Length: 271
Image 1: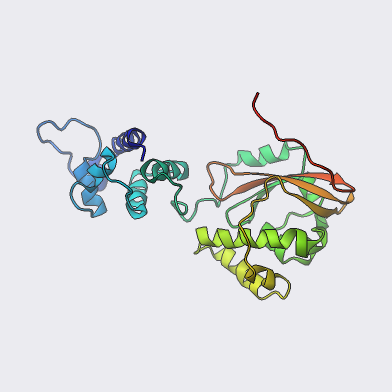
Image 2: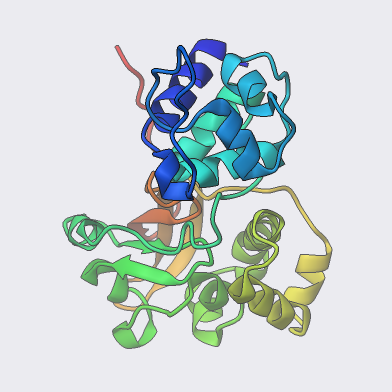
């Protein structure tokens, strides 16, 4: 637990909320000068025992339950990054999932301009792998010149995807199914992910790979074979990142090189 950071964060956000906004009267007792909701009012609004919130804000509630942190975060109007910070300060760990079901489903519009400015093929998908943004360099490398509606579906189930992704059964699918499984653990109620899982389980090629399991592997730094629609066989080296305001969304930059596999590039380190 990081008491000072936790206390400062909660006090500052509590002070922004007026009691009147929740149908409560502003406390007028002697010594009450702090703005915003009182600690006792928060206990009342959350239907928690007296002094529960005081213990959290003062840092004396060791390993507070995620359910309490989620209720506080929602009452205080935290965004997803503040939610992550709250869990780290209070429990020394990242949250088990997003604060809101809508998290990871959208990105600021500026990201389309940012992706278009990238030299290499690049795209951004949301937490369900639905396409949010891509550049022309990316659409030029896929059949039909159109971005797939959902990248996970395209890579695992679409015949065009299996054709473009060379050595699909060994170089691609075994690394994709753990990502799908991990996403479902984090977002079990995601209808898009559940629909893809159902199609995977009904597919004679994908189902055995999915049932076999496998470790969770992110694509950052991977190099995999591909048949570029315009430039022919080659290799993709992938750079993966996440827009901070949209947990679960992912930015993928694909550095294509034609021909045989190469030895890669050295890591970048601070000097």
